[in-house]
Length: 265
Image (cartoon, rainbow, N blue to C red):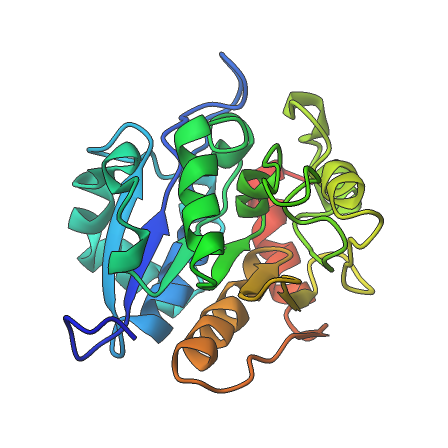
């Protein structure tokens, strides 16, 4: 825990990319993937929000429509707008990882277009890694873990680590693979050396907790249904407990209903 505060400090990162590609459907960050971890962590931690561009970070409108029956997400949407309208610039946190106790990348399709290839984000993750502080991400947030080389090994940072993120089957089921710059599951599997994991069924909750060989945790969640469990795993890590991974299938039906509203099928 940081010595300057009674609470651990967590840095949340949102995407600044507003569309799928240059002119595809609107995107950005995904509502429940911010709302649920925030709901769990905010009573126990001090949270700072950053994005590549700073200022207002684009909220995926489809995630609002798909969350109408999610009380936590809708309360967050109605009451916490300032959090995503006044983000700080990600680059301003370079050299400051020692001020925080964990970093968390919110999902949404936006990270596929900016955070996956942003050198400032890569360097920030390497700083947290060098200090053995938890690095976490959910859904498409793990795209931020790609294209990072571990300077000690010259291998991908997540090489040999079990990891998860939005699956190819889920992307195809939503009929959005056509807009993606790369298939996330495939790239995570390549970077990890075949260690990608996913739930038995599409949209099932899946959280994977791994330990870097030189220390520090990697916490990843597969999809929106996994966001709350990622938040719990981060909190457990900050409180000195062993974070829990695993999967559940009970939320599949509810999430699928929301996806049908978004995609029309």
